[in-house]
Image (tube, rainbow, N blue to C red; front, side):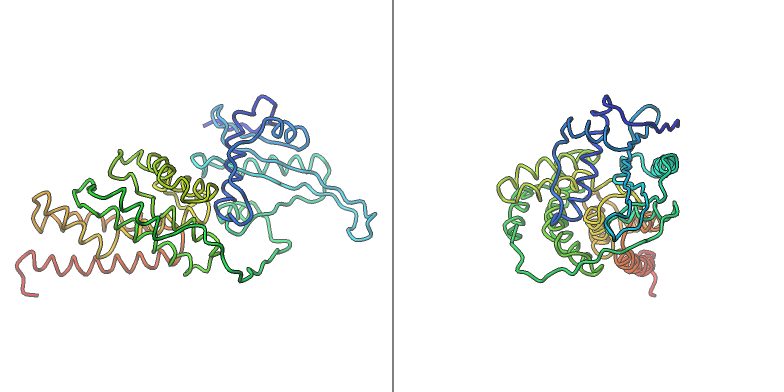
Length: 364
């Protein structure tokens, strides 16, 4: 595929606008205490950005794939604090999720670095939030090293209750009452969603991550499969996001609701290093974990019984999934999730061994 990096122009507004919104919302999802969800980016703001800064647009086969913004900063020593020096600072770098892992981010950084050198600036640097692990890996691979560290100490204040968790759980259960999943397992989807809403909070705590995202995690996890049984699998995320907006309108603060809807819409799009937010990855990992271990054994046998399959056929289904365990493990983002996954897989393996013997009529 042909990759071209060029300067942004006034005519690129429509192509760049979704990416400007996207980078803002990556931060709003991870740190809702400090960033607001962005719904729109005004054209006059874009034109001012394109005129005032060094800008780069990545085109993959003629389609906008990413962008970068480089700012110049100069110190002349007159303030008596900073020595005379000049900087090229990467203020924004964004690549569309579906276009990542193709070298586009590295190409944008290279273009920004070359422009920094062309302008005769002495230093090339950027800032990155710790939640943005995918970006950090890219920058370290490119050669960036930490120069200073900004630290925070969360203050223990009484947290404003944004959501009524029991009320939201009741809304979900009412919505799914009487529905069956594709295997005919009745309340499986509702129970699965409730379990994932608990798992995700445990996972966040085990990873020692910010509790400020708990309401977002709970809401997104609880409603991630709200339309699982009402829409085709390939579209149920997007359909579910819209349905969640309807169900929770007036129940959840709009900013939080929109962030949760964005997670629900694409929660099934799993990649090990896609640059998405910490909250997004926590929900994905909790969702995947709930599909393994004793719960999967139960679900598998329920499916087999409803479809008139015998014990041996049921074991074959489990064995096929076991063969893909390496793939599943590679899609998990957090060490705690990986460790829990391995434990659940071991439980399945032990069951398969015992059930295989019994299935063949063996004593031991």
